[in-house]
Image (cartoon, rainbow, N blue to C red; front, top):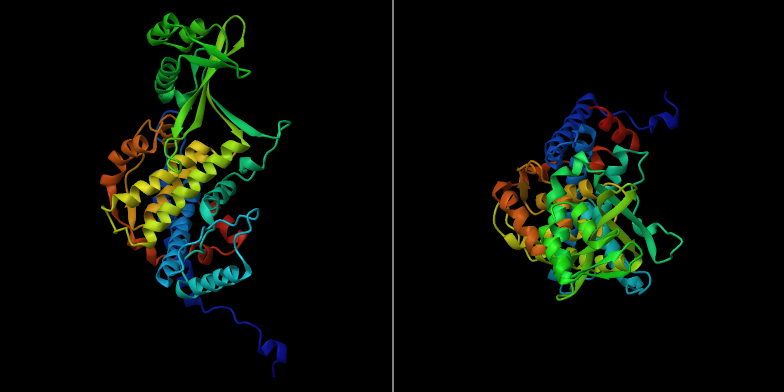
Length: 413
């Protein structure tokens, strides 16, 4: 007779059940690989990384599942007549009382019971994009994928910056060479439009009418440097949608002297100040809540159509790229999240990113959401098909519940 402890010990799953679980995991991986291939940039210098593609596909699927769970929660509140609270948890304002928190917990439990294969609802835009950030960190564990708002410098208002050279010593950076002419054109346009630039230490340098004429005729950054006579920068505009009429600081375009005799660097830079992050937090929060409101109201239709939802997703992606909130991986996290949101709305984007296009650069060099949507929609929207076939997949967390299972899946390329 077996000891009492052995009698109640859990038995291993039957072989048939184990095989079924393996088939379900394979379905998730196949879907992730299919979606992940669509994040690939197809310009010179953009190397194919199948691990990164799989991680992006997994992120997109998890975003799809979590977004659907979040939108169901919003819809329940609307039907109940309670209205929709903000998804974020703002400790400073302490808006939610204990009763609200208990209701949220009950709703989350209901979501888990109703949709076993779905993800967990997310708290705000940051919770949404954190899914992709986590998968980006899994791909390259030694690279710091950090929310830049957590960084601090000697200047308490500055949380760091990113600098991306496009041309150095008259040599183009291979990966960004396709955007040299576009960046130079935006730089010239801003110089002519503003009739001033800023020096490296943020001092304004006014341009005369003769200088403006020379800027219009310039063909390289060296010609522009000759007009100004020193290193300089301009800031691209980013038109707010949360506060219409407000123009935010977008990306900085720099022409910098790096050595003598005259050698210049043309680059773009995002200087991350605390107040800038706060501004883009408002934009992203408003964009996310607008999208949630549309989905809770049933505005989406599977497949093509319902462009309000499609435009709302692109609006969220636009401000994500403009904010540049991660130290590494902003581009792939943004696009994987975009694909996942389209899937959650019943819309599968089947098109690959056009050759020589980089979606994050399109956003950073475009002054308004409307212009960005116009540039993206012309190749994205015609490729949309019904995405509901992905809804039968098991939840990503259910398929790969442990760190070991995730690492094994990522290693099996």
